[in-house]
Length: 342
Ligand code: ADP
Ligand code: MG
Image (cartoon, rainbow, N blue to C red):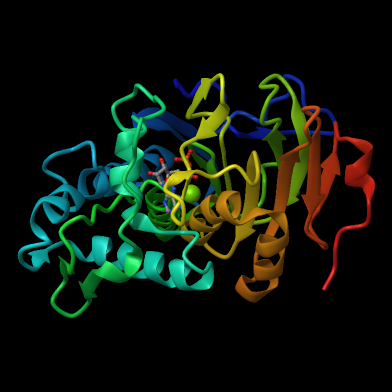
């Protein structure tokens, strides 16, 4: 349950074990949004205070947490969940932005991404820190039952059993805001990590692309490969961090909205997309959709991915988007098959 090792790790040079990036000008690590946030500033414009920039970035993340955490009774999302079935509830515009993006993602993914998973996520104990297989869990009501008024900044549900959980997208949104805050303050190079979501600003301190190690979903001490990206947004989802494990196997915290049960099409999905919010939402959707359907979707959303499935014997088999710079470090031979094209 505890989030020890990050799913994506910054690596330097050609190797990865124990090699760290150059010392940053300023860095912060804080517990927020149920995970660890890390912000590192590597280069700034003349006269810019890197400490102040990291503070501004962290402040954006904390603000999103206060608005969107379902664990906080006073968050906008909690107020919506308590009241929106009986009346329109006023919310901060940031909540409207994320709900609208969520709806867009739901349409793109044919409902695989659906923020109305709250009652199911709760029944599985993923919110109270004690994941357990429930005897019976409610199915999500469906995203179409959430009405968002983007002019008045109001949210209403048209059914009583709707509950919204932005856990699959809010961290990405928070990272986008944090990165923008740094950009506006004159930061030239920075690395932001929020529990499996990474946003980079500019190039790495050595002037080269950032190298991100993608953790093996079952062997925390190993990477399945290293991704090279410029200024980018990358998100990993899967069942490596929050899950129930019992005689029926492992069940992760991504829910298949069609069945109301944990999705198991992929054990890990790493997505590179145009924004951290999109990468976050898409990586969650990928776990529901599985390799073929998600690979079909990728070109339409301008994303790229590394998708990992487990074979019955427990071997990890990866599929890598054409055009993605990904060095395989430990893969089953099947992964060497040519990427599947369109
Ligand atoms: P992490 O929180 O580990 O970064 P994800 O981004 O994949 O992982 O988000 C998982 C969270 O998203 C769950 O804990 C739950 O809050 C929410 N969620 C679960 N299933 C779905 C789904 N099908 N669509 C949208 N959100 C989901
Ligand atoms: Mg996500």
